[in-house]
Length: 472
Image 1: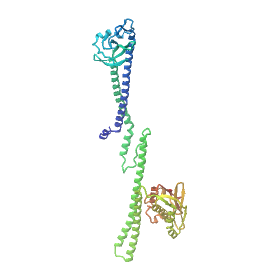
Image 2: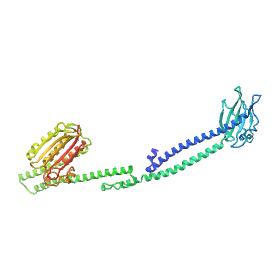
Image 3: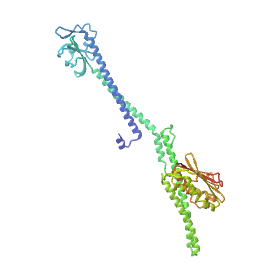
Image 4: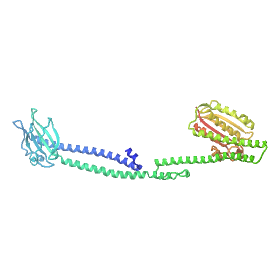
């Protein structure tokens, strides 16, 4: 059956109908077989009871005679007339000697060909089925035993069973017709129900065909009149489409921003080179032009390095993970920024709870610390304070970098971790940067199963970044 389904294309509704029909056929056939066998056995038991009844009626009229044989006494007083009736309701009676000689035959035998004599090999009551005149018949044998225990003869009571077989034939026909009609009606109804139940699938397929890379706003229908597994499936697909659409939007913004960030220094370099080549210049002028281009090259290098770093993190599903001392790493990396903070007139302070261990990689955690502290110092004015904290909360180690610098508004918060995003404020644009630092921090944090959040009360109200990582 599975090979058949693989060879031919069959719709789900057709396959469901076929499986349903096959299952129903097996169940109905087993039920019909059981019913037929039970009815067949019941008819035979009833017929044997009929023969036994006739036997009980006849036994009192059997007499033992002097020659050691058996014979019937006068049967005038016999209440049963079945032994004298011919046909399906007749009972055919014979007395048979132990040697197989027929001692007595009832009158209704005259209209039939002789019935073969069979002497049972047992000394107890016995019944057999056989053919007589091409029709099924059944005979009951009862031994006639003298006081000494010797068998003097056999009482044979026979009757035609063909009426029983007619009943069984009609039952077989009725069962076959019933199974056939039931199968036709059940498979027809099952196919209709299957098509009706799978109608939402056709709607989902039609809607899915309309979804393209340029048309990600389309969604699958979820209203089918009843909530079932298909509704859950459609909603799951819609959530996935929303994630894909958001991902495409991020990639478009990423491409636009990357092109802008790379094109700006390249354009500056090209303009500088064109100006320098227009006419002969002094050694000092060429040196100044080269120094300007060197700054543009450094900016390009920083952007490309950030992209490579972010790409490496994105490709990894699992970064190296071991038990590391977050407190020690934060203290070491923060100390590297002390001279820079002092040069800008910024107070860099640390509040580190010792021996906070997390499951991560020391190098990657260093990148997180460097990016957060670098941003805090870069976007804080002279006289500001930058605080680096390490604490423990529940089962997480927390790194908190806060400052009293320029902060950000709610609109900027929504895009703060987007790649290449930089706020439009003059103070931000005046600082050199690629806009990839926070994106790298977020990517590394997520890979280690952590979370990152950003808080600010508004422009010039400072900011606070919190990184939570599972403790070891």
